[in-house]
Amino acid sequence: MNAKSQRSAVVAMVQILGFASFSRASLYGMNMMGNGPLTSSLVQIDEKTGKVELVGKVPPQKELVATGDLDAIDAKRDVYYFLGDSSAGAGVVGISMSSGKTVCNVPVPLREIGFVGFGQSMDYDDRSDTLIISGIATRNATVGHSVLRGTPGALCGGKYTLVGHFQFATEVPMLHSSTLDAAGQRLFLDLSVDKTTVAVGVIDLKTAAVIKTIKEGTPPVDALVGIHYNAADKSLYAVMPNNATGPNLIELNPDTEEWTITLLASPYPVVGGNDASLSTYDPVHQVLYVLLGAAPQAGQEPALHVAQVDLRVKAIVDYSPALQKVGLGVVLMMSWTK
Image (cartoon, rainbow, N blue to C red):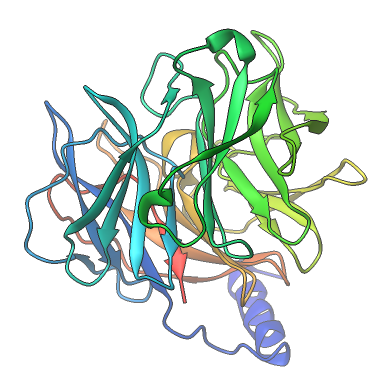
């Protein structure tokens, strides 16, 4: 079966599953507007047309933003959050998704590991209506990795309560990739168990205790960055680069610790974002959104497309045209909302 026939078969399967064409989702993210120092602005991304549009007419954010998933959306209050860094330290910034204006900015007692965002995580728990963040405590680094939970319903998390500490992820190669099992109150995140070993950590959000660590292999096999939890099959997913053969869909069942790798047929082998950490997930339709591009030519950065990966059929079912450039044309973060 050739690539065109494979694509037709996948589309037919999606139609059978009752989702012939994806309804227009809302993708929001931070886009680089300046560099030296780095500034960024909230944008809305149209996954059908590739249009990238600034939200409101406001000055760019001055807080430093790391490429990846240190963001979250509170759909109840129409607020987009990101965990940034300034001369005052780490802080949670909230931006109105209607006007683009900053609605809150709350400092948090966390620090990064060498680079902005490294060793930190951020997720929104819709069950408890709280923001959950983690990282290295600024005042007492010897306690290890801290997990903090915000005040229910408060903008930017309000006053954060310490859930607890765990002993890992206090050094590189810890990145900043995490996802949440809200029903089971488990936090999954990439962490370093020592100076050379990366693992997926499973954290109990009631106590911050480490339930288990699942050692990762060498990318592109048995490695997860930009991870998302699919409650439908209770598995973790990520799209990872696989050289010139196309991206891999990596699946990990955290209960059985079984890894599954599926090669995604695609003309775009390049996965956007820092180590493939730039992606977002629609849990309603089980669709993972990721930025993919062609192999770079003559040292130039490839144009990126929003690819829709349907986890029910384990295949890419749609692409946007090349993303339009706004500012410096670099999307740093991306989140989905209803």
